[in-house]
Length: 199
Image (cartoon, rainbow, N blue to C red):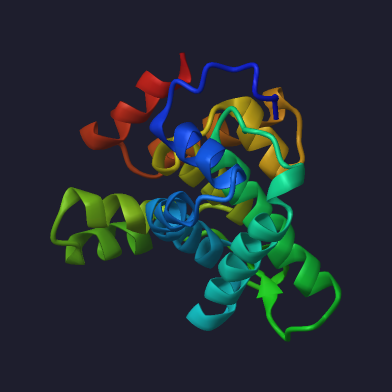
């Protein structure tokens, strides 16, 4: 995260700068701007209730307000908030203040679904988007998280690596392996759009 020497080309960075100066309206706008992104990402990390994720989001924003005088302006506000949320969630889980587990710790069946099972699920889907969700749900959790961070949250590979605590190349590998696995299960034209983002 860099300091205020950046020219703040993005609207969210302008809001952040105003929030740092104590502007409550800008603080509220940042919350409204990113609550859905943070909720979506938070619920992909843990098997838990909506209330737990929302509590963690509120904790993040409460801490931001309390520490605003010591913060600088991030290059990517969304990345900063998603990483802060993950840190908060994992901190609570490690302290065992909550009885919830991260998805990576949940005991799933160790076999992979076969092509017939996937095709049966795809048959019941009503749209390409539903079919894609079915396929992504078959991936290992870290590959799912990497895909979501890349294609839903639009983070770059360095930022994904920081969130997942791996290097940039490992982040690229996670995304690439996920796409290769999707293509291996069933080759459909709508999957090909992912390759545009790998250049």
